[in-house]
Length: 381
Ligand SMILES: Nc1nc2c(ncn2[C@@H]2O[C@H](COP(=O)(O)OP(=O)(O)OP(=O)(O)O)[C@@H](O)[C@H]2O)c(=O)[nH]1
Ligand SMILES: [Mg+2]
Ligand SMILES: [Zn+2]
Image (cartoon, rainbow, N blue to C red; front, side, top):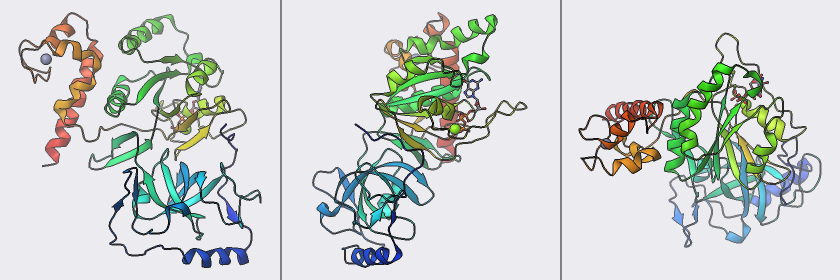
């Protein structure tokens, strides 16, 4: 049974200055190399990429889950492995136990750790932290995007069961961002779900038709679609049913209500949310760092900061079509086996589009994303 989420993150502390110094002395006796040129060595099981800074016993390592990060400090939930020094205490002045959260810093490879990563650390006290991450377990999957310039990957979270793409009904949802997330999830074999929040603001008959047509392609893709109201509590139980067996993440534009959903899911959490600006209809980027929360009835959910856009990372344009699932059954009948479904004659995908069997908005997004990828790959040379 996972420990219930505490309102305040425990980052751990030592009991007194005197004892802190004692522990520091002890930690220096551990075999931590300081050579910045040290190479990686791979453990036999290939699960662990261990920093050469550490050549101590594996049995001295403790293991934990990264639940948040604040600058150089990772908040890690201690799960197994070597025990803490007896003088390491929580902020509530209780001895640190398995399940507690502590602050860790990282050297080299550990720096690549993201929320959802399983990390291995040694108990080593520094000004900022009680632990030093020396290795990151290989990931099952990760949600990765390109940075603003499209030059570097940014890993947003790792080891996910599902990505919940959160949109709001007011302002109306945008399919461009949704379709980009769908591609990124498909590439990494991560399940998805679509949340349309703020149903309480949505009364108009005329808009119901628009919404139905907007949702059609996503219904055809058979992804879960939930219409909710975080502030009214509508649909929250159904969401909870999905969340309880999984580790998932809320992603989407700023102001759509991701943190409000967390507040609805975890009574008493009361994380900060901010009004969406009337003038722009945009959120204020209230959440600035991702945080993993454990739900009372099981499951873990990560709240993430709102984003402006989502650039796909490491996607050759010609591979994009493989991630628009509804194209696949038609693509086999295209005249050219490497048809991009953009301009080629006898393209079965374009024929299906003409017969309204492929949704025009999905196809247009395909073309847009393809063009973006083409621009990026031409800039690279
Ligand atoms: N009417 C209504 N307002 C909502 C609902 N959910 C959230 N809001 C409001 O929308 C605004 C933004 O909510 P947040 O939860 O901060 O949005 P966010 O997606 O976390 O935003 P970032 O942290 O910036 O990414 C707040 O004023 C919320 O009160 C809802 O279901 N209905
Ligand atoms: Mg937020
Ligand atoms: Zn084609």
